[in-house]
Image: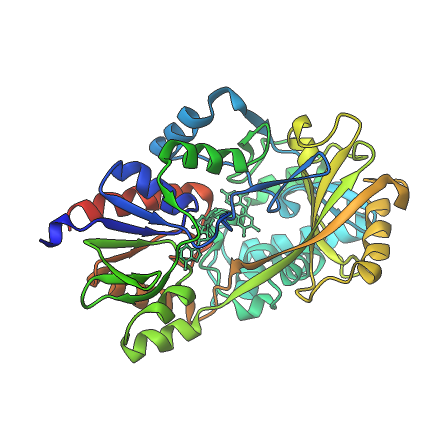
Length: 429
Ligand SMILES: Cc1cc2nc3c(=O)[nH]c(=O)nc-3n(C[C@H](O)[C@H](O)[C@H](O)COP(=O)(O)OP(=O)(O)OC[C@H]3O[C@@H](n4cnc5c(N)ncnc54)[C@H](O)[C@@H]3O)c2cc1C
């Protein structure tokens, strides 16, 4: 009997939809909202298109790449990254640690000397640290730490780098070699560094990917969420009725899934309470003109600016804004609800300093937005708490996937691949 039950998938984001695409049949895909609240999404506002901040496709795995290319084909553009760091009135190339040229001689010299000392202490090898702060100091030295790494990351994470570990750094934080840092300090051009030197982007915004997946599937039950998951009897309660499942693939955030479980082990509830993430407040900003710089995005470490990163959708693709306009995402350092009256004067003055606009009237409108779960906080509990919950869930035939289903700093490609893998595992149950 059990094998006739469907595989139930929760959440129609990239992870849930790719699981369904892989399964093709024998599943039910339930999405809580009538309009899914997925991260990979684009909204249209006054003729401008806005994603949920920068969402660029880095596809290294063959099958995720194939799916995206099959779905979007000619709608994708390949883009060579133009990103910068804006500090003390100047732009330098990304990553800061490998491009000190252009900074004031005093700051550049301090960064370079302290980098050389740190490099000698770790004998040119990439160092690990107990905390992210230790990682920064050991790999880059106190100069780069002070002028960029600590202030920038504190704004991004909303917590001091001493509160998090370096478990997420391998992919996201380039650790250049000494000769690369020296070349970058005297202005010798090198190849672009990091995992995102080139990326793909749909001409009309990243939401085109989710839309194409949903169109391919056609079988999403919108406005449908479980009120309980009885894992012992392998059934979920939806709209007052129990539905049996063979396997459950959940892309719900773990801190949403665990409270739905009927009498879960108390250790799992305790582990769940340990999971942390930061929220994000940002602004969708529409301009009456093209942005004054061609950069895709810029990092802004200085405290005096209320944002830590500014990106431009219209610099990714001209179809993101009307022909004479432009549009931006402005990621705010504060996690508090946005009061436009107080924040906009500081945002405008920062954008003028950065040369993105000339005056307040260049802005057509600004909308405050938020993402409740934005970045996973890799504190000392993270690996143990998420690892234990995921292992236990799998033992109960609940395959938890996606950024907050696994509670990790994961990209869209990860969500797609995890969906595929969960579908393959569920078929064997
Ligand atoms: C600020 C930010 C920037 C990012 N930038 C990039 C980038 O540049 N490149 C990149 O590759 N990745 C990026 N990512 C990561 C990327 O967005 C995610 O990895 C991916 O979109 C996650 O997909 P998902 O399916 O796991 O989750 P989601 O997209 O969150 O989907 C979950 C779905 O579950 C639904 N749901 C919730 N509760 C229930 C319930 N009880 N029942 C049923 N359904 C429910 C929600 O409505 C939602 O539709 C970024 C993420 C953030 C936060």
